[in-house]
Image 1 (cartoon, rainbow, N blue to C red):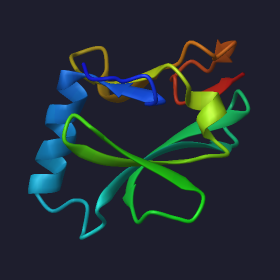
Image 2 (cartoon, rainbow, N blue to C red):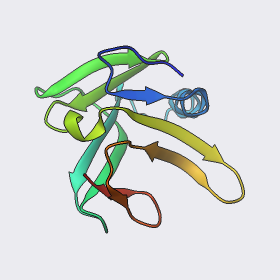
Image 3 (cartoon, rainbow, N blue to C red):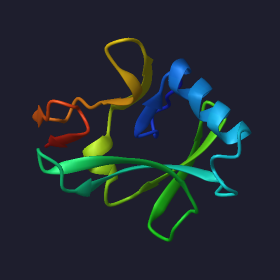
Length: 114
């Protein structure tokens, strides 16, 4: 895992390998950054965002595990301390957010309340 004092999110080795694989396959379609964020909605109030994107005016930029990452400054408070992992097992497959600030989560883990 890689994290520094100023990084909001930590990316595990498994997640980084999967993100690098997606980038190598061209899944980012020329969009240089991995966007990690939240948006209103979902069973519990907020849903996670993970996608490839351009940097915006309100974004903070960092490099985590050789991955250029952007996070909207207004959303960072909901993500501080979050670990982005990738599961590849029989019981779960895909990116998983482990957020210490989530007071409750939905059954599928894709939304939370803070």
